[in-house]
Length: 95
Image (cartoon, rainbow, N blue to C red; front, side):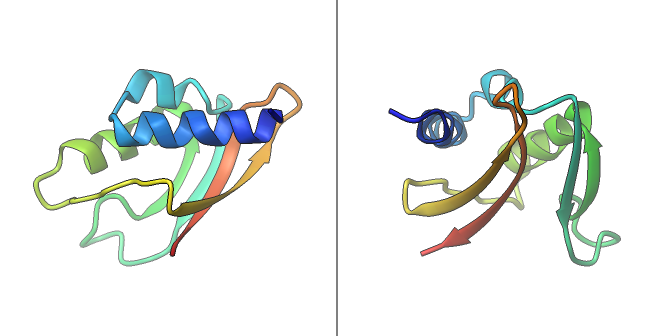
């Protein structure tokens, strides 16, 4: 299995099971993560630049009463990888 496929499967598995520590370990320390929108009204929108900020984002998504996310294998992810095979950016398209 290719490294990209392995990381994608791991990413989706960790999302589905809300395994935050394992999920965060897939990311590089320095990232540029952008989710456009009204950041004053929706906390998980905006730009993140570090692994800790990404962790805060997923804490918000996983544990917020207003955030009801269901991650499945029907979510298509485009991953851009560093040389060390760490995820630095993803975009999702729900099919």
